[in-house]
Length: 264
Image (spheres, rainbow, N blue to C red):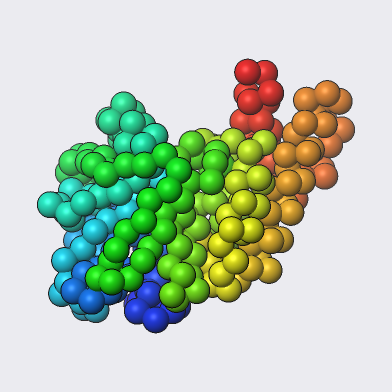
């Protein structure tokens, strides 16, 4: 996998990283640029900054697509820039950031030193439904369409380039991640995104850049997951687990999250 920038629209770039197969975005305007997500440590953020500077020397604004560590642990290195995110993104980072870091160190002890270096920085510019950024004369729309992969997923729409950065609402190369998800709402959130932002180029949070056909197919899979989870809640999981479109471990995680929603 190359970690070079891929230009997917006019001065709109995607960099796909070996670490977590994460995508970061770069949108360049006249005299300003926008960086989408900052990677999972200060070391990785420094690498991203070097890559950004290979394209442009302009000052930047940052957007975090949601509050999972691999998308924001590099924030501190981009200061004093404005960092945008959903209001719940900032709340969750401020409330649980240190707890999540401790959990990551426990899971990945070989990265302890790298993770302990991180200064946890939450977005300082927040919104709940929509915001519009002027990036050097280019308009970028930020939208929150509802619960999905997390409570605070933000998509970035670049209308003059026909590009939509979907964050982890769309995944490529691996099944969607349900660990912190809202499976009953996820299909409706993706459906609203695709209806309101009918762009031909969609950048997932992880994996290769996709088209609308791919995103629509994943929407159908997510709808099936939600429907089967509701059925399992009534009939029992054993009778339907084989009908899910994802591997059993992923499906069981989705069901557990859906049951939490149903039982609430």
